[in-house]
Length: 62
Image 1 (cartoon, one colour):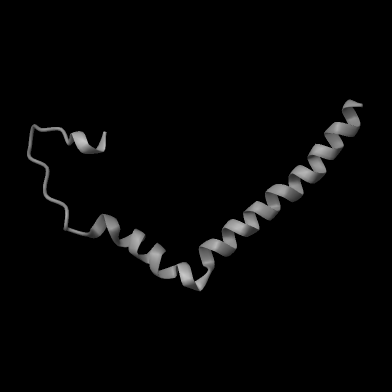
Image 2 (tube, rainbow, N blue to C red; image 1 turned 60 degrees about the vertical axis):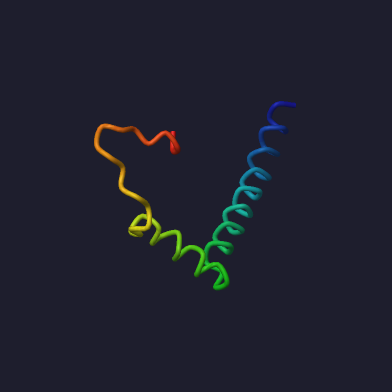
């Protein structure tokens, strides 16, 4: 019983995770999503956020 269950889980688990991987890859490389991901990649470089004063901890991002 264990061997049959383990074989089933190994085979179908591999296929399931491979399908999820392909789905994530297609989503990430889809041309419609490029602008969204480019904006997210530039986010750390934006100077729109106010500077944090020395000695004070930013409580909003805890």
